[in-house]
Length: 116
Image (cartoon, rainbow, N blue to C red):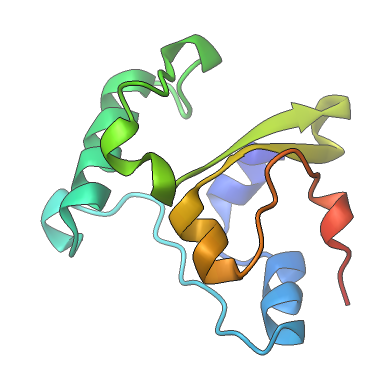
């Protein structure tokens, strides 16, 4: 599933969810140049991600260190893959993200979100 998402910037499920919540869907840019990112935290995350993954599509789970992410921890979401990708559990739903979303999904699954 991750490979499929990486090949496309369109996710009908996500778009439908944002539409149902009367919110603008995010624009996904999979490989932004660091200079195009408007916030220090985003540049920090991009560097961390690129260093952790090396040449792989995604970093191994063992390369993700929550303590190293402390400067931006409130702004990130970490998902655990369930049932071979059939669902995902929010291991971390950052406090700033939860505040913006007006709810905290930590411990819940993507399926729990429902949908249109």
